[in-house]
Image 1 (cartoon, rainbow, N blue to C red):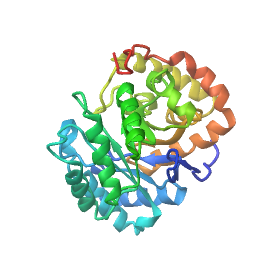
Image 2: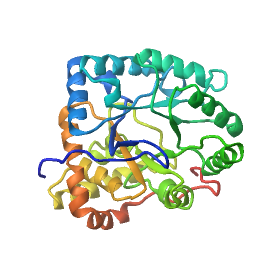
Image 3: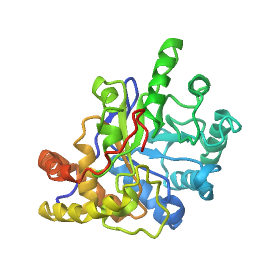
Length: 322
């Protein structure tokens, strides 16, 4: 593939700021790198136009072992000489121990660790029990009024809970979620493209922030990753592994890599505001950047070739994974 163009921007959601089409995730990335390599990666990303950094703190929940992720990120951007005004910080508010650990506590911890005064956007999720939607929306808006961040989104929420949040925010004159961070890949599409979230995307109520696009590396050619990877709602991982061979074959037709195909697929969806991926080497970043040209030149044909690989069709009536 030819050298990648500079990464463009899109609004993160209705009324939201412009963000880079690509964003760097933090899970299992910064903590696996040599510090100097991380600094070089952050600098190269910014030079290429990747200005969105999704940075979560992991004091709680199933990923608590990565408690230093946000600390490392803050050290990296300072060492890289990246000014706070030069990047969009997308944080996380977790519901695993909420409200015992409040949103105010979570934001204070994370911002102090990174060494900044505010984030730009925040994603709220995940949850293991039925959430108190009015309280969540109210507490998020308190943090917005306090200047901790400007806009917010949801992370893999049940579609019915999303609707309740939108309705409550509208009724109370509060800021609603404007984007949804969803697991979205060649083989995992129903939540984003089915009848649960798509009406919101089509209506312009929400934008889509695509995450876990490589399914832990499986769709990028590492069918059995050694590192810890994300959850498998819907139980389709074996089918995803089967799909990985077809992705590699399709990539070869376009003189592309599997990672470029997986990324370009997301770019063919007009609802996508930005695509998150994790990289731990500059070479991986450069490879992913090549997806821009692939999507521009072959997007429609590529999606048609990939459509048979859609695996997840088992979703409950409320929009949750079966």
